[in-house]
Image 1 (cartoon, rainbow, N blue to C red):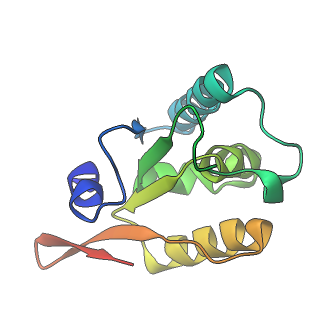
Image 2: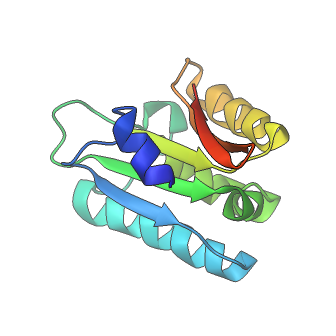
Length: 136
């Protein structure tokens, strides 16, 4: 449901390479995050060593987006994976977080905002009374 919400909110576009990061285990999350980083590096080259200089660049040869669910985000925010997830997230034009807790949302805002040192858009998809609501 996350990608559909992302498209309806115009955060995901048809010309983006959208990577769905969903895993039931830590190892699965690590594998998918690594694959996402490798995919971007194969197209755009290695990321800048300075995370503040990473991110989507208008006019780049490709645009990437990540859709990640709350369970997988829990693995991604562990100390061992946090830097790799940050590397992936800061190279994407859009990151959509689905079914995340308020604590997870706060951690993502603190992590990404602290590194980038600038505001950014965040879309979370949260179940409310058996339906999903996008918040920005």
